[in-house]
Length: 131
Length: 171
Image (cartoon, each protein chain N blue to C red):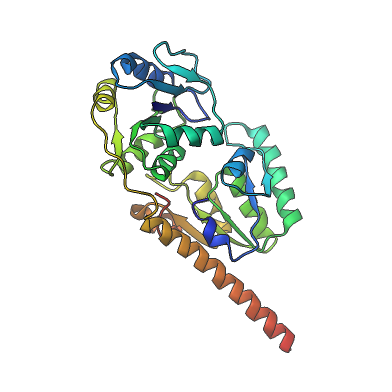
């Protein structure tokens, strides 16, 4: 949401795993996806299904995500239906790119890390950070 | 009021216990958001979970934040220009999947308004001492740079599509 103004010139649609975040940031229409991480495989599978369905429904031309697993699912699905994709690796990944960021690599047209010392690692570029 | 948070994903009883022990010696009362922890604070008011809207109001109203080294809290503290004390979860103690919170601490150390503690004594000393607020978040050149990079990429892609479509029409 700190990047919100970058999306103003476009017809942007937001998806989150927490409906209340949309309320906090005053986003009127938001798609809510079930949260998931790799420790709960069944929930991850259900999340994968929801993410794919949303992408097939919206048919986005571009996807920008900061991850994690649901964002990765959306990015992969979008890439497979021809979208251009941007992965902004979580600022929490300060010692090395995140695992989901590494998985996103073959599907992401632009890969950004938020730590300047990680520029160049695993094909990530540094172009600023949210903090 | 001092706002303590362990985030929404995992409990962090060791941290809550440490702050609870120091709480009576602090200048202000502590409100603790303790997640699914088993330990019930005795010297602090506590809640298990707080929704994002109410949480943001608490961040706005608090004097400073004491938190696990979670990035969500770091972003919120910066947004409201509040001093922030960070205490990392350790993978070794099964407080998280790995030690990325220690890495977060290392990466943020030395920034204005961010204080890092690795054990109970350090934590107590910082909580008692005077704390400096971070710079106002309205001026944040690194964030603006990221926003411009992402915005620039999107505009470039759109220009490319529009160009391709125009060429197609000409054929």
